[in-house]
Structures are given as C-alpha cells and as structure tokens.
Image 1: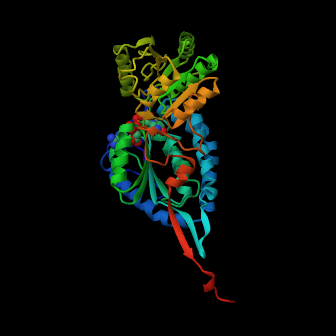
Image 2: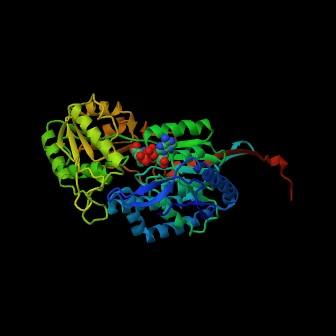
Image 3: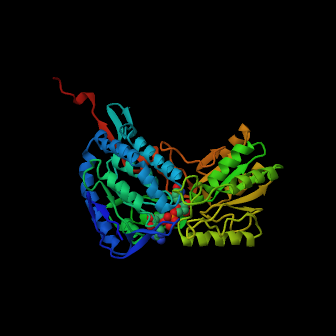
Amino acid sequence: MEVLQNYINGRWQASREKQTIDIINPATQVCMGQVPCGNDTAIDVAEAAEAAARAQREWAEMPVMQRVQPLYRLKILLETHLEDLAETITRECGKTKAESIGELQRAIENVETACASPMLLQSEFSENITRGIDEFMIRQPVGVCACIVPFNFPGMIPFWFLPYAIACGNSFIIKPSEKVPLTMQKVMGLIDQVGLPPGVVNLVHGDRASVDALLEHPEVKAISFVGSTSVARYIYAKGAQNGKRVQAQGGAKNPVVILPDADLETSSRIITDSVYGCAGQRCLAASNILLIGDEQGRVKDALYEAAKSRKTGYGLVDGVEMGPVISTESKARIERLIDLGVHEGAKLLLDGRKASVEGFETGNFIRPTILENVPLSGEIIRTELFGPVMSLVNLPTVDAALEFINGNLYGNMACLFTSSGANARKFRNEVKAGNVGINIGVAAPMAQFPFSGWNDSFFGDLHGQGRHAIEFFTQTKVVIERWPKEWSRKF
Ligand code: NAD
C-alpha cells in the first residue's frame, strides 16, 4: 500500500513519521493508500518551514509580474487534468463527479483572480501631506504562510489562500485533511511542473501533531484554517498566542427562509440542491428551512417531492445526484442526531437512514432526510449535522425568522426566497450572517469577494479570497518622506 510522501523544498520525500492511517473510499470502503500521522510529522513541518523561509527571501524580491507567471501555467495544468482530479476527489471524498468538477472550477477562479496581483498589490500615495512631505504605503510579504484544511473540499479550499500567498511574495505550506490527502498530492504533482523555485510551495501530511507544529514554529508567520468551530477556535487562540496572524473559518448551521410569495418550483429545487448537494457536507449547505405564512403545506410538499426523488449512490456512476458521507463514524453520528431530533419532538417526514445502494452495500450512505416541526428550543436545530438532513420549522413572520437566525451561534450563510424586493432588502440589511443569498441556495462568494463568515463561523478579520487575501498575505509599511525644494541642488 502506497504511503504518501511530503513535498518539501521542491522534492518528494518520505515522512519521518512511521505511523499511518488508511485513506478510505467512503462509497466502497476500499483502502486507497496511507497517510503519515503522528508526533514525528512535527519534524517534517520543521523541515518544510525552514526550506520555505530560505526560499521566501529570494522569492519576495522577484517582481510580482514574474511571480504570477507560474499561476498562469498552473491554471492550464488544472484545466488539462480536471477529469483526473475530479475523479480523485470523488473517490476519496464521496461527492459526485459533477460536484468535484464544480469545486475545481472554483479553485481555478482563485488562481485567475490571484493573477491580478500586480494590480491588487498597488498601493496608496499622498503627495504634499504637508509642504515638501509625501506619504505612501507599500505592501510587503508576511513570510512563511500555511493552510490547514478540512475534508469536504480538498481541491478548492487550499486555493482560497495558496495563489494569493505566493503572488504576494510569501512561501507556503499546505497541510491537507488526513481523510482526503490524495487530491492535494496530485495537485502538488502539477505545482511541481510550473517553474516555482524549490521551497516556495510545500506539502506536509499529518493530523493534529503537524497542526500544532505549524502553530508553534517561529518561521510560520500566518495561518489560514478552515474546519470545525472547535478546532478553529483553538487554532485562532494558539496562533495568536504565538504571535501569528490567523484567519480561521469554522462550522455552520445555515437557515433559509421561504416567504409565501416565493416561486415554488424554483425555490424548492434550489433549496433541495443546497441541503443535499455534497450529501450536506458543505459549510454553505442549507439546514434549517424556515417556512413563513399560510402556504407552508404546499412548500413542504414541493420540498418533499424534490428530496425523495434525489438519486443516491457512488459519485462516479452516471446519474447519481448524491454520494455517501465521509466515514462510518460520520454516518453513525448523523443517524444519532436524527434520532435526537425525533426524541426532541420533530416528525420524521422522510427517513434516509438504513440506506443501502446496490453494488455499494458497505458505503456510508444516508438518503435525503426531512425532519418537520423541529422545536426551536431543542439541540438539533442548533447543531451542525454535516449530512443530508433538512429541518423544517414553521414561523409566523419575517421578523420571527430574523429573530431566530440572529440568535444563532453561527453566521456563515442565510438565504431568503421571495419575489418582494422590500422584504429582500430588509433581510439582507438585518440578518447576522456573512454570506447572504436572495433566491440563491448556496451563497458561495466568487473568488473576487471574501468568503465572509460571521460569529462562530469565523475567527479573525480578513477572510479568504480576493482583496481580503491580498491584505492577509501582506503587511503594510507606511513611509513618510521629506524632500523640501530648498535642498535641491542646481544642475
Ligand atoms: P476538522 O476541524 O475536523 O478538521 C480540519 C483540519 O483540522 C484538518 O486538517 C485536521 O487535520 C485538523 N484538525 C482536526 N482536529 C484537530 C485538532 N484537535 N487539533 C488540531 N488540528 C486538528 O474539520 P473537518 O471535519 O475536516 O471538516 C468539516 C468542518 O469544516 C465542518 O464543521 C464545516 O462546516 C467546516 N467547514 C467550514 C468552511 C467555512 O468556510 N467556514 C468550509 C468548509 C468546511
């Protein structure tokens, strides 16, 4: 069984860690390789950090127009290898191939946006702030930056950070999720071909020991994290304690409000896509569906029909619309939470537990599930399930929906379905969430916008993607210069 290697200083090399864990296909339970995990990954991290620090000094001196050239080459390589990468994502992560392709397209958009860094890095200049004195700001790289990423978007999430970090003159270390390390392994094979100096981009495998090593290494100056809230909070605190800048994106429990004037056919289709896409394992998956007003029965029926007809199976099989969840533990956890919902008083309108898919009987499948009349006071309405479960809640007014949403601990996304501009405007102004959708089911910002979680969905101030990434990966220097006319020599 192949044990994955690290990529450090432009070379593939075996980890110092001898313990490994298996990489399992969640639809077939086939073991596809092994990834090093354990305390000795800290030695790998130290090697990577030192190589990255050496490389960064020269890389920062290269003009930005030259620093983006490898990104243009990477875009072409990602496009050329799209099919192969998408199949790898589906094999290790479970989502359908179409979803894997969609995720990679989002990665490519970030590479394209980072290619605008020559413009994005331009800065501010004030002439004559007082007579003979000018003041200006320049952006300089931070140093060695690292990202620690979750299992659910192995091909996209590293690209919220990597292309911007290197375009800004930093060097970079990627720590993929130990559950899905194969995609980045392949992407690194492509990065190896784009002409970056050794050490500018490095890949180190592992789990919490490698994360702690990144948080502690003095050469690592900035950490970008995406994952669950409890780990995000830990990373933010420990990174800050060690003097690093940190952006840490956490979990979510996303509400969607449907007003009686929403287009029923479109909204039920979009909302079921949002709840069940990627088997609900998206930080922007709709979860609590808040039905307002008198039309609740009709809306519920439309959602039920759309959910029931969704085809569950292996993501590489044509026509499959929803794959398995990531692990047997995750499946058991989600099923336990469905039980808890029923225990708390919700009615199981559609039960996706005990799903068996022909030919893939051992897969971690849960079919679309709907809980209705979910009580506002219970636990299930506040807990991130990260599985294909829709919770229906009846509320009398938009104000009641806003009050419920704004009392939520998370704030990753909130959406409204309506044909009323005035209600849409009120919602977008008053809702406490960082990514807002109006007649949109997955309000995922394009690469030129920040991925704006709020509350317990984000710790930090500058988010991933776009201008925020440029700011996160640079430190500003303000220069004030005095050159009075009287000092000029006559030539
Ligand atoms: P996770 O928090 O378990 O793992 C994320 C990363 O942290 C992995 O690389 C893992 O190795 C590392 N890690 C795990 N436990 C750790 C610990 N105790 N100490 C140090 N490092 C640790 O998350 P996951 O299960 O891989 O991903 C799912 C979660 O990610 C969900 O909560 C989801 O909402 C969230 N997510 C958020 C966003 C966002 O943009 N806000 C995007 C995608 C996923």
